[in-house]
Length: 166
Image 1 (tube, rainbow, N blue to C red):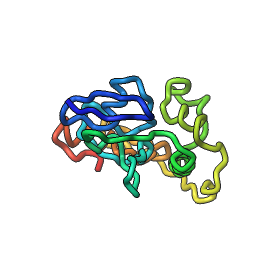
Image 2: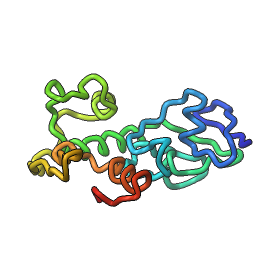
Image 3: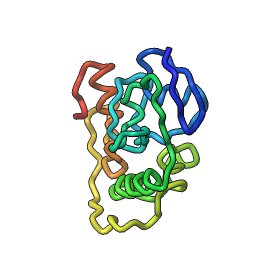
Image 4: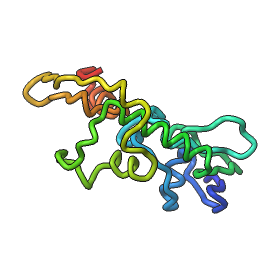
């Protein structure tokens, strides 16, 4: 067992647990999109970046192992600004047509955009429209909605053993 502190709260994590797993076990929220318990840690979306006391850089909570005595901070002005920028970049190629989407109201990206993002960002002028890519009877890639989190590619590779999307 590992003892660490997250936002001033002492928590215990299983050996080998990531910072994100330790936080979630103790009901401490850290935003994330690419983390999935079915997949190996990836750290691609960068939303789960956290500060660790006495460390100059940021750490991806979903891929960083929890360490004994570690002091983690999940919300600071620096992290909030970084998350706003990450969400803004994700929305560059993702249309803001939530009312038309079948995930509206049950979408993690939508929730994060309301919390951190801006509906009209400084990068939107770079948006490129892309057509859907039908890969077979069961797979249609709608790249105009892709936020490059890597989940679908990793599911195919890690669970199906095929690089059908990557």
